[in-house]
Image (cartoon, rainbow, N blue to C red; front, side):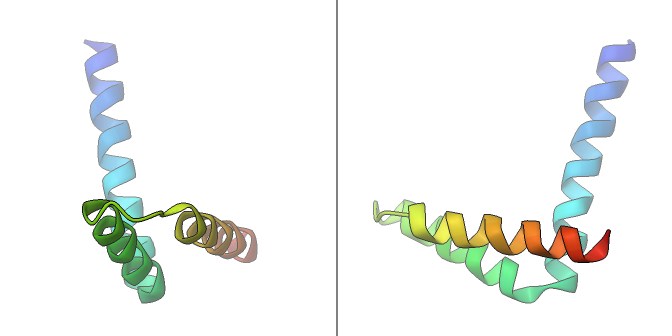
Length: 64
């Protein structure tokens, strides 16, 4: 039962943190959509993903 509650809490946190982050920083949402589109078109995504991770890390460090 505890494991089920923990997994539900983790799922909810990850779902809401993405939404809050994307609402506060729309450029992250746009890049996320670009990554999804590139994957559907079987295009390379490494550069876009790296930029996204760097921006998210920078934003997290600025807020802490």
